[in-house]
Amino acid sequence: MAEPYCGNCNYQLKGLTESSKCPECGKPLVEVLQRGPVALHGKRYTSPTIIFGLPLVSVALGPAEGERRGHAKGIIAIGDVATGWLALGGVARGIIAIGGMAIGIVSFGGMSIGLICFGGWALGGIATGGGAVGGIAHGGGAVGYIARGGGAVGTYAAGGGVSGTYVISPTRRDPEAVKVFDTINGLLGSPKLSGGALASFKLLAFAVGWGIAATLAVAAIPALLVLLELSKRRKVSSDGFR
Image (cartoon, rainbow, N blue to C red):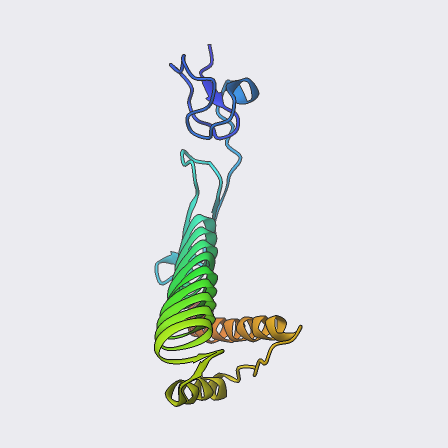
């Protein structure tokens, strides 16, 4: 007789006699109990082009080849877990990382960690998010050496509710804090917000614009290296053909 397994998560159910639910995903057994070969519907792809010891493109999504979750590793990596120069996945780690949890020089994610990071929760050198912790932090709640947000805590802090050595708040305006934030606004071109219906939209557009600019700047370096390597290979191939 074929072994029983969960049709939702592929968990092996052999020997499970006292539970009405799958111990892995919690689904009722009456809904997910299956027998027969475990169905693997994941995707795997590795490009034949190898650069600096890594495939140019690696894709690993879903269960396949004996893995419950795909782990992609390449210059461009796309997977449940992705590691690469450009990584996209549930967990993404790379120079540029985009995912549910993202760790990279530039990162975008529900939880984002990096030198420059954007996310629901962000931790990094320059952090922007619903909750942000960093050297320079901006968010709904922000904690950092320089912090700005609805609630902000820092040496230099600006926001609705603030705590810091030098602050800008509805009831206090320290010259030291004004100087620091005016300098940052001047360098980054931050919009001057005085309230109003468009304030949040302007701030969002500003953060997205700088996020795109930072991503392109960081991506240019590995992209140039890849192009140089491909160009070198074409030249070698062409010389060999001659």
